[in-house]
Length: 126
Image (cartoon, rainbow, N blue to C red; front, side, top):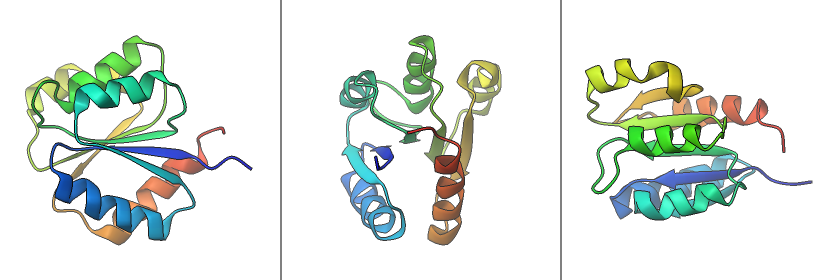
């Protein structure tokens, strides 16, 4: 049986390391980490990612631009925008083209995050 692939994208290695450990212990999924939104774009183009969890505020390409590029390329994988800061007007202006996505604010509760990610993975065909 194929395991789902979760891509974690955040420019802070501490965040991706901690999230990776939590998800590795809690989910039956392959966890892939990127600390660069540009590298994440390359990983996403491979087409093997089942769920994207991305930060909003990053250098080079913010999380919304990463999601927009993903949608423009035809991918409909679920996305979680995990952020401590989000430009609400930009988010509101792009809601329709970014679906399906969800915003989870930092700091997050690990149990809640895992529960929400599990729910997203259930709906993803492998």
